[in-house]
Each structure stands twice: as C-alpha cells, then as structure tokens.
Length: 152
Picture 1 (tube, rainbow, N blue to C red):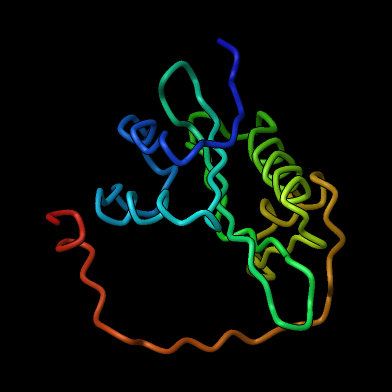
Picture 2 (tube, helix red, strand yellow; picture 1 turned 45 degrees about the vertical axis):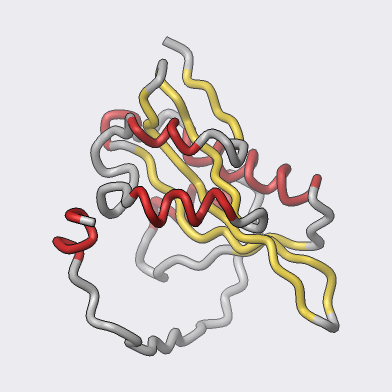
C-alpha cells in the first residue's frame, strides 16, 4: 500500500485515533490533542498507511519582534515497522514546505550529537548542520507522571 504524507487541518484531530506504536512518545491525550489542533501556530504532518498513522512530524511557527517568522521542527517519529522507507525525510520536507507557505524564513531542528539516524535523515531532507555544540537547559515546572496523562 502507498503511504500518504499530508499536513493535518485543524478539524482533523480524529486522524490521531489510529496511531501505530512508537510514532509518538506517549499515548495521545485528548485534551492536549485538542489544544494542539486549536492553536493555529501548531502544525502536524502525518504519514498514513490506509487510516493508520505510521509517522508524524510536528512543528511550531513563531515570531519575534525583531525577526521574520521561523519554523521549529519539534519532533519526528516513524513506526519501527516503517523505518528505512524514506518516510521521515518526506515528513520533514512536507513540514518545511508548509512552513515556507506560511512565510517562514527558516526552519530548524535539534537532535542529539549521537543520533546518527536522525542526523542522516535531516541531511537527506536538505538540512545544513550547524556544528556548533549547544547546551540545553531544562526547567522542571511540574512533576510529569505519564501514567496520569494516559488516564486523563
């Protein structure tokens, strides 16, 4: 079967009712799903094998007072059953094209320096690596209990 790659519209949250294992980090939370789709700056590209979501790339376009809009690619995930088929690259290139259609100046993504599959995929999608090593700082604002997230 052919894999369809497309940007989901705000009224298509129901597409996430059928997701293959390991596409997302955790089960879909209906409250957060609806909040995500309710925000016009959030974007989700999916890979569909029939009506089953086998891949996704999410992004946020944002503004600063002194810069044109940019697209931050937040996450890319592909079901293990569909690895090594070029789906990740197609998801990213579709998300980038969507960002360009929104007037974004640049798109960017981060990954671990040791994540060779992701680095290869981003290069295959046309990314130019910035070899400057960044350090990420995290502020824990609340305790995250993913078991409670599933039960919500």
